[in-house]
Image 1 (cartoon, one colour):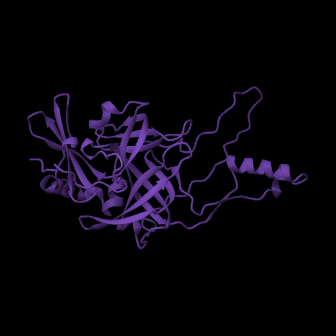
Image 2 (cartoon, one colour; image 1 turned 180 degrees about the vertical axis):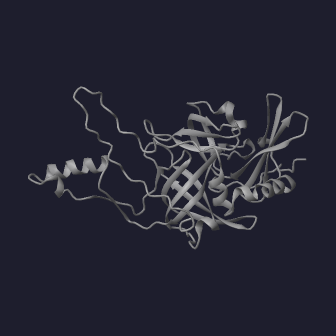
Image 3 (cartoon, one colour; image 1 turned 30 degrees about the vertical axis):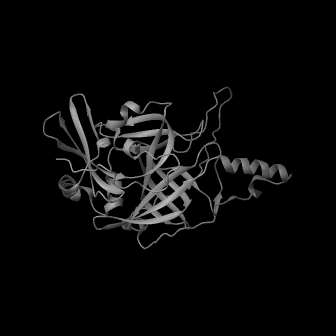
Length: 333
């Protein structure tokens, strides 16, 4: 995507300090990502996955999924007298095109939406909030990562199935995956900051250590980035800027598009690490061929869903790879 689409700019710390009138209530600086919006469409995800205009290929995608795709028992549910079935294709890859069909119970089911369906890695996450899409066929889900900090958001394509369980304060195991909207090998081993809260704290400490120096003498704050694993809010909910070290690479394919799965790990001090399967298509990668041990920078879209019960990892089982087709995957007539 870098070089083919406008690059996502690296997050910068903005100076949020304001001059306040005497007696005015204290204004807290907005948290990073506080100005994000909820997007209704999935166009960017389809472009990153297929390299084509979604409007031009959707009829073909839907037709292929309905003809050659399959479904699973956990991808079928009934609510309010209506039946819903999620179909996906291909059945032997962890990155798929999916179509949700719905209709009156016992009646004809017709397509209502198409989504990229990504098999992810299991993560135990506490639900904080849910923002349903306007059409009610998907939702942005927020989960708590660190107490008192912004939650992490991802798109749940099976919200219609999961909605009754997405209760704030309740922890579930989610399959979590990412799709690279843009990706490249990390360029900088050091981040230079000249404004914002971090810089202000650095400046105050430096001036205290250098009596007689002026504000103009304060050097930039330099933060080593080599080996860093970080995730920062993007422009919209569910989108993030990440820097990480690739732990493993696997190759997959969606029709004619080669797709690589990069396995990432985000450690936390007070909780289990966040594990992410990040899918990057040849379109997004361009000429870059990621390898194990590479440090990458990427702009990603996150997708997750409550685990399909038939796929729940057994205690002690290897849960470090995306799940492929499960027993019982069958075409839906």
